[in-house]
Length: 621
Image (cartoon, rainbow, N blue to C red; front, side, top):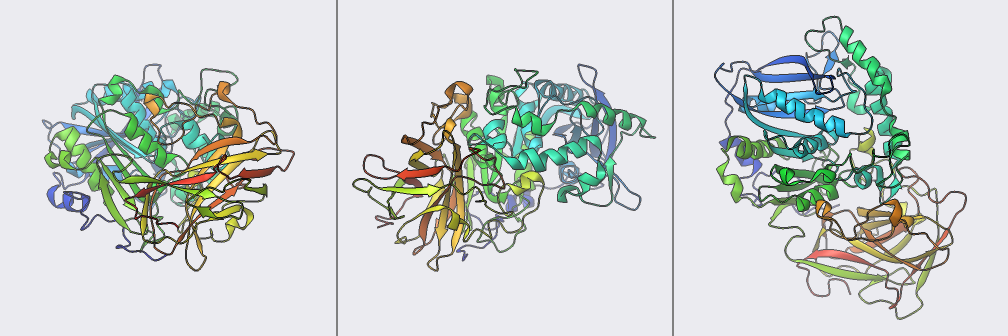
């Protein structure tokens, strides 16, 4: 698709920052240039479990110098043992010591309990006891001779949420965190998108974590993230010369939870394990632990427009829920972990954004107090795809947002006014309908994607589609679209998938964003302070399940994932509706193929609500 900007996510020349990450590199000078030392030890936490900890310090650090620390907690091996001939100390976290240590930070990387070289077992996907391990590690850091008593934390995905968990412990040394591509609520952001179980989690992700915990190297190597042939299992600590302790630790991992069973036992947000009803998705979510102490920790929430299902929305909700004027929000054109620039208008799939300089500036400001100009920056930066440019904002939704409604009609059109009466479209659910292997979900299962939704055109042939008139002018869509669908179904349950599309004058269709809802979870509630939400909020509690009466009309409010997209003049908006994504989500219902009826008239005005930024009058006729 033709882009209008540079086609790069670099901040070079961007006016969205007063001092861009690109420019900050000129200001921030390394303090140490002679490399770093690595030591690896066991640290015993409060219940006697030994955790494997690596710490990196500048080689030429004076015995009198004290440094702030950046700590990462990972279930994916803090460091790999590598075969002879490879670089010593191979790790997916090499960026942390390589980048931060020269700028005057100690870097600490920890195998969480039940993983890597750490002892213990995991009771669940995060747990309250794991959370308190983080407090104990923070205590250990502050007692080291090289520590100045200030701690920051960051990481991607699980590691990012772990940074947030650390911030919730109330440890006084924790001053700033950067949770990137990380959940806020584990249930809806990760396990059950819109109340529907994500198969990518129960299959692909479950397989790789089980293999890592048991040191099943053949299975681990089948996943692109871990396919380096020089990787040789988790690295032992320094004192474990013959790996006896490592083998003993891995043996304890045999008691770890099973990811597939863990997810299957939690169809509602407040569902617990069969053996432990307290182990709900709430207590493994950072949002559950929002307290006054948590508000005090400066937080930079980072995500991308193609980041899994709920991660971009999680970043927004994290930003809106935490009350600290020092907090920041960054939303880029990226997939999970910013492995790929996923914008269709990109020049290259390789991200060019100077992320480490931006993170350094945040930590410099809050751990060292040296980035004085940082407080002058706007709190929010976001990248608009197709326009291919960075923008900034004081608030979210961004100023100038106007809600534009396009109504469905019985002929498959989207128009500015609803049908007078009796409009409806029937759709027989196609359970073979799926969205391909180049979607936002693949990275969650450790699968690489280079061109996102490149195969989208034609996939909506198996869906119910509504199409607008051509846009009269370029218009920016930034924020959270919402679909309001008046629906009846022949079944007693079901799912609805709503896809927003950009349709070129040639008819080629491009995926913009999507929303999902299991019909049983349609009840809308007031959002709590700890999970401030744009659009409809749902508790997903068992008590709020609302039964579906076959053939009875019901109003569904479906929040779509946030986006920032330039719709060009002459392009049309498309809304595609399906009842299944067989590749990525569980089938609902089973044993029958329902017929969905979408109603659309003045009494039941099904519509898509678009957040347009300063739109011209009558952009859609």
